[in-house]
Structures are given as C-alpha cells and as structure tokens.
Length: 139
Image (cartoon, rainbow, N blue to C red):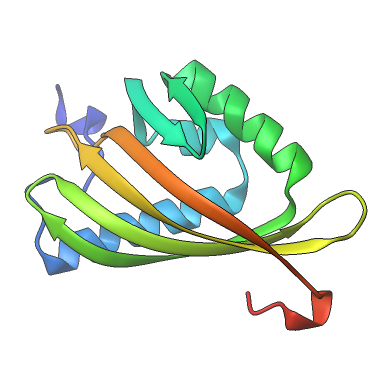
C-alpha cells in the first residue's frame, strides 16, 4: 500500500501514537459523519456493537447513519485504557437524547485491532445506557 493509503499513526503503538489514534477516533465520531468515520476501518472490518454484528464499510455506514438518526446531539469522549502492538482497549462515554428529549449517558469499552496500514480491522464494543436529566449532562 502506498504512503497515501496509510492511516497514521501506524502500529506497533507507543504511548504517544496510541493517544493520537484514540483522539483521532473521538474527533471523527464527533463529526457524526458516517462516511468520514467509516474511512478509518478496513473494507472488511468486523464489528460487534452491543448485540449487532457488522461487517465491512458499507454496513458500518448504514449502522452509523441509523445510530445518529436516533441518538440526537451525540457527543463522545474516549480514553485510552491500554495498548499492545496493534491492539487497544478504550473506555468511552457519550451523551445523546431521543426524539422525546430524554437524555442518556452511554458508557462502554471497546477493543480495537489495527492492520499494518493503520486501519481498524476489528472493533468490539460493550455499551450500557443510563437515562439522565438534561441538567446532569457532562459533555
């Protein structure tokens, strides 16, 4: 693959590059742009998101489009939990509201695996939602 087709930083990660990768993911997801977000993943990326099993960029785009149609005013914060070679563990929280204006804070953990070109090839997410009052928002 050419340099232009790599997704920097590349594995194996060190503390600095792992933090950069997490921040880039947070920034991308906060755009709420399914096309932009999907470009960080391999064409055949494997996901588990809650109970959904998603395979490939096209399914990722469809999933994210549906997600952000329901999870309004979505705002996300990610935190590096650990890393080794081409894998990372990340904790996150995000806030959103539904059409009835009920706010939620969603907490979870993700396990990430990257290919040699810096694209995420596996993402496994466990997520829990907690209803909150709008006045209890932190993000």
